[in-house]
Length: 364
Image 1 (cartoon, rainbow, N blue to C red):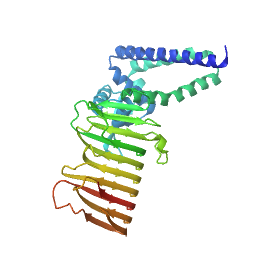
Image 2: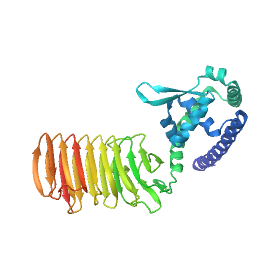
Image 3: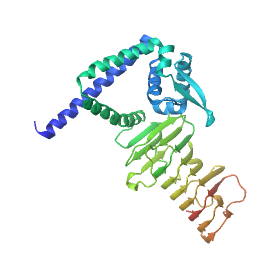
Image 4: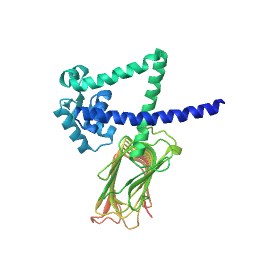
């Protein structure tokens, strides 16, 4: 068989064995759960804690895809079964660290569970006895390389993505929305492009991040975020225009084009600075804060004609243009208001901390 054909055949066999192994591991988990009279989800969470080590309940929720409420129930049951302990995080007393039992504690507190796990380990040792050390190292290397691949597939399947690079989530009765980039984003576009029954729809040209959805909040987390990724590896998020939204970017953004004209915006906050930021706004309802913390290289804000806006800058501006007026360089603190602002309730409050090289505020 030619080399290319043999390679393709091996890939097919490998995929078939992966599916078979996955099904058998599910059945094994169910069998152990029934034997020990525990919830299979609890057992899977215990397995994650045992392999990864102590973590917060929030981190466990991220790894499993469970809601924070469901994870609280899991930890309660595991603690009641004396399989984990909860301790206050010394760095942040508001957080709780969930710790699995050590091997010695497991043998002492849960001998039946330890016996089952020991039996599985013995079976594995018998199966790999025919392999040399070098061959076992190769198998271990393959499994380690497989972990991130499987984790990415889990994230994609959870979000119900269709074509590669496209992910969406149903509206599911959400009355409001919140889009959060938890560790920054390189190049991103945001608009009101989600379907009527969708909470959001996203398209990715490069790396697909982890995305969690809970109670209308969409949290986006890039594992290997870099502000210096090219535009060709950017993303676009379409949000549902029928509900009000808050948008938050933590960790900065290299370039962001936000066409928010079709959205009911409740607030926008960017922490960590921005290189290029272009925001097109719709009509505000009440006072809508726009906060940029960490400075900006080039910031452009457009709003509908007749819309009031206040501006507060801390850190100076190299070049400011507001509604046709050029101010040039201004040091220290700046406080301005548009001519439309007469003290009414409906207006944008733009706050910039850390200064800016070029700031343009205009109407269209």
